[in-house]
Amino acid sequence: MLLSARIESSQLVSWTSVNDFVLSVTMALRFREDPTLTSNWGEGDNNRFFRFTRPDAASAYRMYEATSP
Image 1 (tube, rainbow, N blue to C red):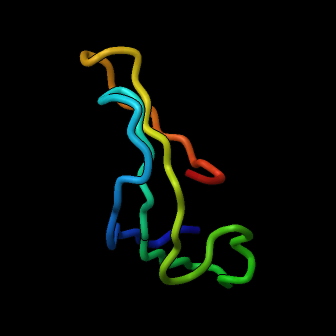
Image 2 (image 1 turned 30 degrees about the vertical axis):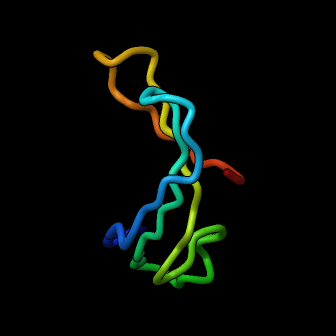
């Protein structure tokens, strides 16, 4: 179970438009269970790429974990 998460940094990696872009995000994560059981996520700093999209400016962003920029 995730106890806490904090964004340490973010950096723009790819820009298509205001409605479609990719960020590299470093998050500090802390888990209740044994961190070795968290699979792809580890205790402490985790670096991931996230793609943000939305159909138009009035819509909310959708966030997807990306395997690469």
